[in-house]
Image 1 (cartoon, rainbow, N blue to C red):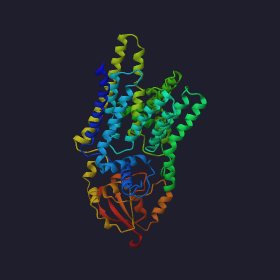
Image 2 (image 1 turned 180 degrees about the vertical axis):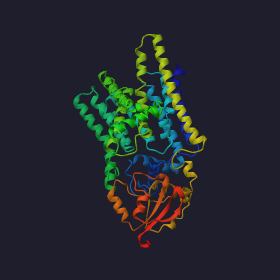
Image 3 (image 1 turned 90 degrees about the vertical axis):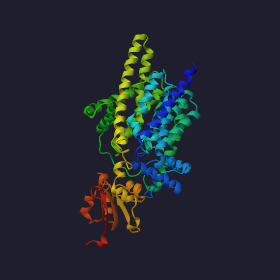
Image 4 (image 1 turned 135 degrees about the horizontal axis):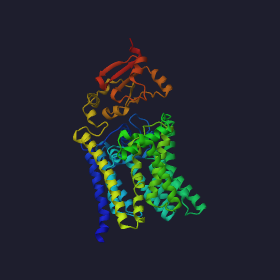
Length: 508
C-alpha cells in the first residue's frame, strides 16, 4: 500500500524527466528553434531589460502578440542575465516536464482512474510530434498549453466548491493566458460555457459568478488591447481578411487530426469527415455529461475546452487571415482531445461485469494505444534523424541552412557604416535582419494594403535587404519593385538574395 502511494508520484516524475530529456535531444545539434515569431518575443524581452519598454527590433510596441510571454522571457533575462536564445532549450524542457507532470497529476484524479491508462497517456504525450515541435521553439504556445492545464485544475476546484475564491483563481489564470495568446479567449469561453450549464447554483448566484468571472478574465486582455490601440492605433496589429472558406479550414483541421491518428497524406480524403466526427463527438459528450450532471470531472473539462478551442480555430481562420491550420495551431488541443477520446474506455470497463469481457476490451484498448504510440515514435525517430543525426538542426534561423549561409555570415559581421544615417532599411524578412545583424528594418508593404504600397513607391531613398529563400507571397516582391524603381545592387549573394539601394537623386 505504501509502495503504491509513492509510485503514483514517482512514475509521473520519471515521465516528466523523460520529457525534459526529449526536448534536449531534439535541440542538441542547433539549440532552441528560432522562427520569426520567436524573434519578436526575444527582441521585446531584450527591450524590456535594456530600456524598460516592450518594443520589437524595429522600435515599435509589440502589438501583433500579447505581452505576457515576452515579459516572461524578460523576467528570466533579468534574473539569470542569460539571453533567451541560450536558455531557451532548458526553459522549454522545464515547461514540457511541468506539462507532463501536471497531466499525470490530473489523470490520477480521473473517475475512474487506472495506472495502466495513465502510463499509456503519459507516453503518448511525451512522444507527441506536435508537442515536441512546439517545445523545440521559443513560442508562446509553450506557456499557453501549460496555462490551459492549470486552468482545468483551478476551474474544477470551483465546480467542486462553488466559492468566489476558487472562481477568481481560475479567472486569474484565464486572464494571464489571454495576454499570453489571444486564442486564450477559448479558455474564457470554456469556463463561461460550463458556468452556464452548471445546475448547482441558484440563478441569481450564477449570474453574479458569471459577472465576476467575466470581469476578471478579460481585465488584462482589455488593458493590453487599449495599450495597443494607444501606442499603434490598432488593437492587434494590421489584420487581413481570410482567403479560406469554412469548409477548407474544416478540411485543414481534419488533415492535422489524420496526422495525429497516424494516417498518411493519401488518406486526407477522410479529413473533413474526421473533423466533423471529432467536433460532433465533443458536442455529444458534453451534452451527455450535462444531462448526467457530470460537469465537474476533469474529463468533461478537457472535452469542453477541446470543443471550444477546435471551433474557435476553424471559425476564426474563416474570417481572419493567419497561417494555415497546422500542428502548431492545434497543439493546445492534443492533450484534451486525447483524454476526451480515450477516457470513455475507463467508463466502459467499469460498467462491464464479466471479467473475461473486461480483459478482452482492456487488451484491445491497450493494443490500439500501443499502435498509436508506435506511430508517434516512428515520426519522432524520422525527425531526430533529420535534425540531429544528419546534423540539420531545428528548422528556423539556427538550422544549418543559416549556419552555413554566406549571406547570414556577412550580416553577422556587417559594417553598419555602409548604410547612410537616417535612410530607412526595408526587407522581406525584418526578423532575419535583426537576428543576424542586430539592425532594425521594416517590411516592404503587403500586397493587400494598396495605400501602403503607394506610399512606399514615393520614398526617395532607401536600402533593401532581400532574402530570396524567404520571399513571402503576401508581400510585394523584388520583381514588383524593379518594375517601378531602378535598384542599385550593393552586395550580391546569388540565389540567397542581396543588398540594394534606391536613391532617386542618383538615378541615371
